Image 1 (cartoon, helix red, strand yellow):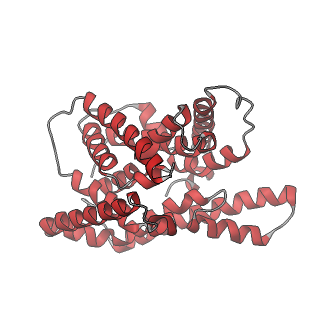
Image 2: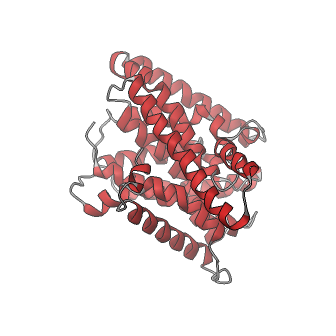
Image 3: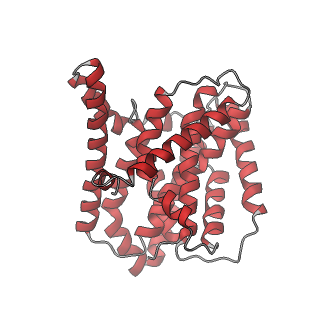
Length: 321
């Protein structure tokens, strides 16, 4: 499928949303609603949208297992290379610590340490491995594909309902193991690639966004959880993601150099933003708008890193999976 810059723009928004999730967690006060909570909640759509964008581009077009394995190996090379590079830099100042290297590598699977965010890339690899099967279902067994998607949505809804009733199922497993959610959003992106609707007024996604934030704040207090990941499977967030996706799909954007440049910074931004968060001196913490400033500063530094890396010969190849 030909790349659509409108969907690339949606992915860019999701990229900044992920930064908002990770950069504002330090400022959240349990049981209260402030600027940090709002900025944090705005990122709730980001992870679902990333999987939807991948499914949108990969599922409708037939992919061989060889293609999927090669792409998976590129992601694995990226993960290992990033951890090794930062570990070598760390070792120059603090000495060799092989145990730390192992801890960082395993942390990419278990969502621990400075590279815990790389669980997402492992989840994408799992999606890639089932892509040939999904290609076949999508093109030759359309109704079965849709039925499987609806069955997954039902499962996800039941799991979310269990969480809202105090169940601990989701809390006990790492993010990577929640394949039912990632496969659902991945397949949802494929399904939306063949669904067209009349132009959606911008007021509709904005209102749904506001309601989703209110819903998260209300239910978050009820279940005692401030984490956005708890609400990925909720009906308000899922509906918001669907409407946003269809809204951006309906936009006519082409030849936009800013979108083209930013869409190519995803992997470097993804790799570096959490490291910046951990080591950046936050001299503005005393300000009432500190969460917003932190998000903007980390976003700018991460994007600057991505733009520079993409200009460097040989180095830029590492960030193209």
